[in-house]
Image (cartoon, rainbow, N blue to C red; front, side, top):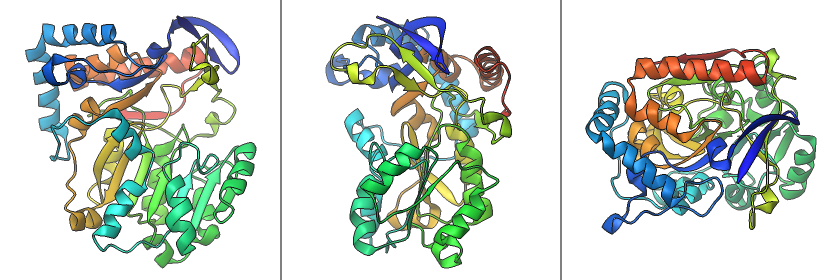
Length: 379
């Protein structure tokens, strides 16, 4: 069944399969193939069907030498990390890692690395629903009485957050790079010891995550042991993309919804909200801006998970190859057709991909926003 895209409550007339607007699955078609050549996928209206996967495999294998060499050449030239695990990882495990910061925090505790029970959650939602900090907030933070801070723009979500996690400080209001430093310093993080002892920083605001992360790390001086950021999984390595914080975004960043009949048991998702393809920051932007202080330890889309380099060294945790992780980890893509992202990853070189992505984003904003918001895109 087809769904229709609505921007700011207005129907656009653009109809397609739900998985053409929001895709969850493996970017590399061969990542679906298990023992004996069996194809495994997920029963979901935003996932590829077995037939879709078979078609993607046929495309990849029709010129596999070129597709593999394009990816390999880019990785050899641009990648930062080297460690990767060839073992197939189940989507459920990757989802568990992405949705539970405690996965790595428990490893730190087991290795004798002390935790303060502190975090900053920028884009806190209600504090618990689909939030990787939820288990940490209910466990270690509550037990230790650590300094925990949530920042959320939506007033209704703020009320739910206060009810769910009354022991967590909450600032209800829109975060920008112009008010962030004062907000953090005025909410318990003025002391250098508090900034240095921070356990986790999570950033998920569906817009200008890149500038917010840079503000936190480079200008405020936060030194979290673990950093978790939602990324734009439609823009593959080595492209470094970031949507900039601009006054133009306020009032010109409408809600995107997919309208249609999703069928049982997915009726509860109607209408289905998605991020615009221009939202956020690419994986390669974060990898390059955060090194050498932070290393990429997991890409469990929609989040990239980084660890402070000295902590990673104590755990024996090497930096993973972002090219391999991007292609073969479970991904969550909004606003791009997966065939485009596969083309940019496996079919064309980085210079051609750069031009095509630039044109796609500019045209999309002009069509749906009426103007092009400030962004950066480079290699």
